[in-house]
Length: 131
Image (cartoon, one colour):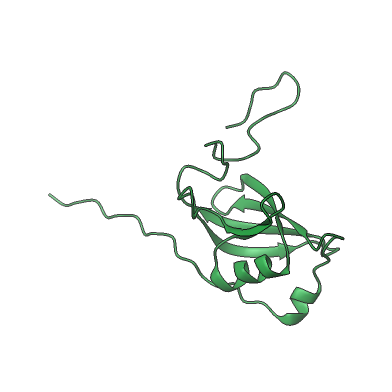
């Protein structure tokens, strides 16, 4: 009898980038740019958070998602407290350079601090909540 293979663990891989690409990002008056985080496997939008130049650089250099907490005024690496880590597969920026799309492999229960897979689990109106 054979034992089923253990699925491969996610790995952090730096994202290649140039100084010119970083210069194309437009940060708002607070020095921040919005980052939408999407699951690379199925396209689910997992969360939205803010990045400043340093957290964007950390994300690209480490292959893990780093954000700037406006309330705590500190950097945070997604999953270091919860264990629900994100491993970056790609980072795109929009035509104006003022929004980021980060695709990730999500590890653990999900991205939301409430325990949901996605932070976007609530819907307006009478429609059902998304899981």
